[in-house]
Length: 441
Image 1 (cartoon, helix red, strand yellow):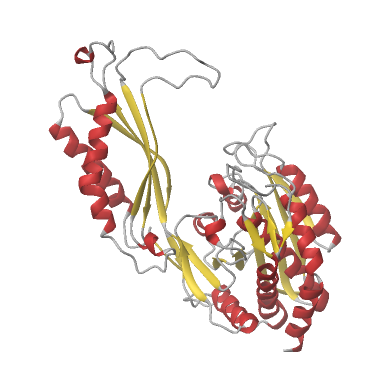
Image 2 (cartoon, rainbow, N blue to C red):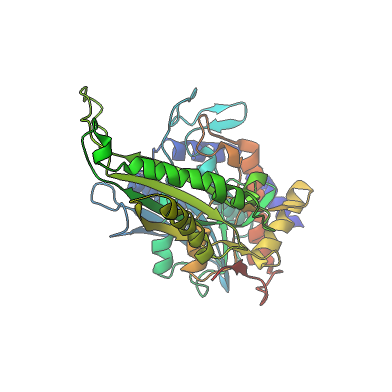
């Protein structure tokens, strides 16, 4: 395939540019929370993509969670139309990164290149993928200036905190509607030879137990909400956690431990609020009259959201039957239903072929243990033909000394570029009526 050979040579020639682009992106600290420097990185991308012939929009997600004049939720959507009608391929990357944390031996915003690896917060998750998609698109345009359809590249806010100021907002505005976009690739770090078809579901809830405040020297005159919560956790250990461990899925979730249902106690707090960091006094002696616990329940395609909630309520009702004065409340914080694109969907078949041609091996199909922005493209945008594919090792995400390999980015860029050739320059894969996604309604 001469065009593919030209593309590979073009991408290899852009190695230094790919490195420099990734480093520039890493050196803009887009920490979320609170959502810093979103406009700065969008302005940088606008300049880059406009120079490559893209029409660029900067879109602020007014009124979304976290959006404020101090921390506005900015997004960028760039589009390059071909000279003939056809389908649109959209590369979507999030621009936000998580907190740095402790344990780094490299500058988290330095973008250092050491032994073929670029280090920095967001290197694999997912500024390396964003850079690879840009270089792939630009290389494709260089070797195939005449093509059908359109290429879109977006950089979106807040994926690390749910995506409501990013993809969810754009999907609600029609940017991911099937009549505008037909194929979506999200360059999340799932390894360069893997195609991620979807993700498990999530249900976040806050459980609160109530008591009665009293003097700490006479706890018998009060009712300790923390002890009530301790009984809830004991019952979870006895009944719920063992039951979840028995639930298995046919979804190809990675890592292996995530092929079962899981529950994480995300936080717990009872009694008085903690003092400020500079407060050196002692707490007052009180029996806590409230204890709050946030739970993070991840569930499988085979499970129903109503059953997921009922299992937690059953734990609370069991404890209620055993303890005097036990009172509680449950508040849902967040829910995402699981989704999985079918292997015969056009974008899946196209990327699988490109992986085989680039790396000489068959693609591995996986499902993410946690959710990402595919949920909004599926649920709000009603677009099923969506996958995650990009460079980077998933286990490095959110870790100290996060990095992305330059060779991995180059290989992923070649896969993305070959996919553009297949879908826009040659048009060998057309939408299939049966290609879509499995989901729970």
